[in-house]
Amino acid sequence: MKKRLTTTLLLAFCMVSISAVAQKVPEKVKEAFHNKYPSATEVVWENQLIRYIVSFELKNTSSTAVFSSGGNWQSTTTPLEEKEVPASVKDGFDKSKYAEDWEIQKTEKVESPEYSLLYKVYVAKNDIQKKNLFFTKDGRLFKENLTL
Image 1 (tube, rainbow, N blue to C red):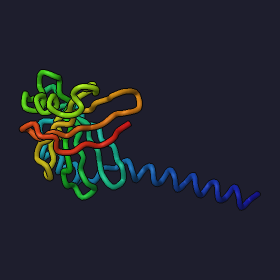
Image 2 (image 1 turned 135 degrees about the horizontal axis):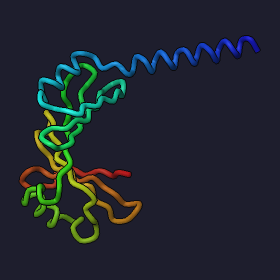
Image 3 (image 1 turned 90 degrees about the horizontal axis):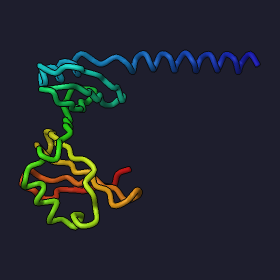
Image 4 (image 1 turned 60 degrees about the vertical axis):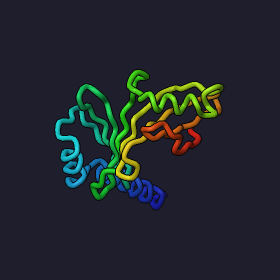
């Protein structure tokens, strides 16, 4: 009984310690964010141990950026209204196999050092069949993946 109580207390202490450590965002990550987005407001950090997700406002637009634990920028995602989606991306979707049976749920602009700029179009055929379609700025379907 005493051993079980000691083990339980030790586990609880470790969980609290890990939680406290996980909440702190390293200065190099904060600095990298502030260098990339110096005028960002409403900044909220989420620690995912190997990366940091930061939600913020910039020019009255909400965005989400991802930084590695080393402070390297990995991507920024910004929601787009239908009128903000480039005509080339709309045309690319209209010419794709998804245009007839799939409905666009939302569209986002995704910037990253790897791909520069992609447009993510979240589509659904029904409650089960859902995909993310990634288009280049010239409307070419670059990649697709299943989503929930």
